[in-house]
Length: 329
Ligand SMILES: NC(=O)c1ccc[n+]([C@@H]2O[C@H](COP(=O)([O-])OP(=O)(O)OC[C@H]3O[C@@H](n4cnc5c(N)ncnc54)[C@H](OP(=O)(O)O)[C@@H]3O)[C@@H](O)[C@H]2O)c1
Image (cartoon, rainbow, N blue to C red; front, side, top):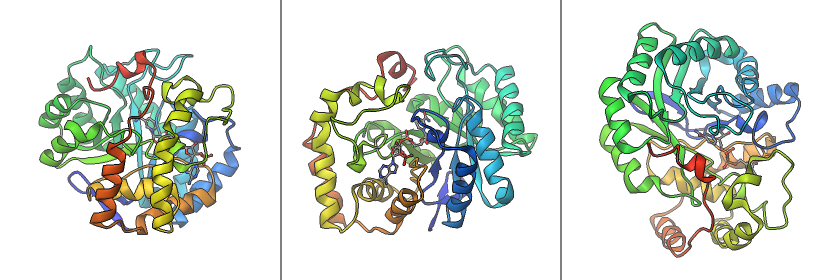
């Protein structure tokens, strides 16, 4: 797979792998040994960028990723995240904690779970309004000086907060939701990142699976599936939002590709410093998604997709209100 550069020189495969669903959000979860084998296959297929977080599981995702990638440690980039209070509720709903002492504790614990002595990219998962971002950036800067962390990232932060953090410790990548299902980062995040030379890592690039065309209003998610609480995934919303899938499917047919490939190729075509991290636990889907890196969309394709997307109003919030309030801070 081709490589891309995030920020000031973190080289990664053009598409990364989101590992969250291996232990979190989308039950039932596969066996750990199968996911370890899957991680090895992902490396064989040229994926060098893996996304995890303390909160995925919680904890078990980092353990899995650490064990699975240990044989390839020097050849891969592992990104993880701190900043949620780990509780019994959905991520985010128990609150945030980016106090410097807490960041240090989480970093040490993540290093142990990941079975490594450095984290390539450490993101703040959500901004903590109680802690000045300069203190967060300063703490990560110290961790970088100590060799425990290589790069600093932020997730779902506002443009203004990114700017303030970047002035203390250069930010290598911002990870926020971006896809044909959620284009808000185009308003002020992408221009800010372009100006500051920061890379962008779209999460949920397949709209949590919706853009692949494999989900419709009849789909029943398991108990505990995160999508059961997302306004955009109510039966009514899925029915109304099928127009987005129809649009993507139309372009897929035209390009002899799959809807997932169109969704990912569209993201890749927006900027050369964008690296989406689709999540999957299935080899055939990994291969399909990677295929997007070789799919060329012409300027006409991109214009047509954008125009078609702009005609559509997506129904339902992407997060429950309490979680949406934790973003863009
Ligand atoms: N920073 C944050 O706050 C944040 C938030 C959410 C996610 N993330 C990160 O972003 C990554 C990706 O986001 P996501 O998992 O929410 O959403 P996503 O990548 O948009 O979609 C994942 C879903 O799509 C399915 N899927 C993947 N490829 C497919 C294909 N080719 N055909 C049909 N279905 C396919 C997966 O099922 P299978 O696994 O069964 O294939 C899974 O249900 C996560 O793994 C996580 O690392 C970060």
